[in-house]
Image (cartoon, rainbow, N blue to C red; front, top):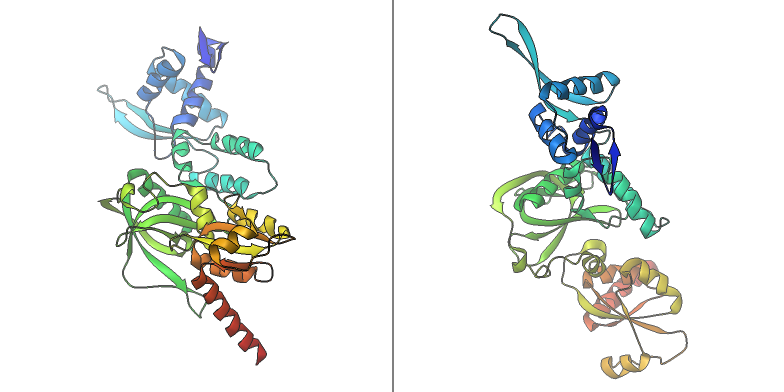
Length: 362
């Protein structure tokens, strides 16, 4: 007998029965997805073309346990008609070395690293994913583009991730308390009532986990810090249809969403034009990827009435970004970046700089 493996075959037949059973347990089971001997018999036939009876399956399962593999099962006692007692086994599953949350964090740590090439990063992620079963692969897609994970005071954060992941998978709304830090350096609810939201995607930005969702009262996307949530619960009500949410009509373009919402502010992105120099291009790529355009000084002067320089070391950049986020970003890079347009954002920054100057002149 030959057993099909990938693009070829390996020989061995029932001599490899225990290995095939082990692979089935590793691929299809965990504490939430258990198999009885009849299920294993069926999978042996489906995946390997092997006809095996339940007694042979049980004998090989017990051999694997005796050999030291971390396999869990349930035992129940049953009395025969003769009065003798026998032990029945059921609910077999492989106890994987890493649970889903730990594997997700390992994947995140690979994505965080800027020193690992993209191709190698994907290879490492595939290897990490293979340490679990088929069910884990379906949950990984809900967390992506993760730069760096930091520790948080909220011990419910990882539980929040699991609950939200389940809600996304089942297309259900969630309810949660949302918190802010007080002067006692502890988290306190922003309001006593729970927020209601339709969750669509989890993502991390600037080292923090965020939920991209729709707040029940509005038709736009919102971003909530997952480490600021407590008492997350899944509601029976289905999540709002994505087509009814601005920015989700054709699905979520996550790289675009992140580039437009640096610092994860939730206001609508606008076209913003900035004046800078060629040495700042690295900062723009770090924050916006390559989703920005370079404009000529002549174009800026003609279309925006700004006395733009037409040469030299001056560079004009156009990005689509949250104005609230750009306010903070432009303040951060204030010595090398100047907002040209829109005028309201430029005026807001000018007023903030005036107040800063007044404070430092005292």
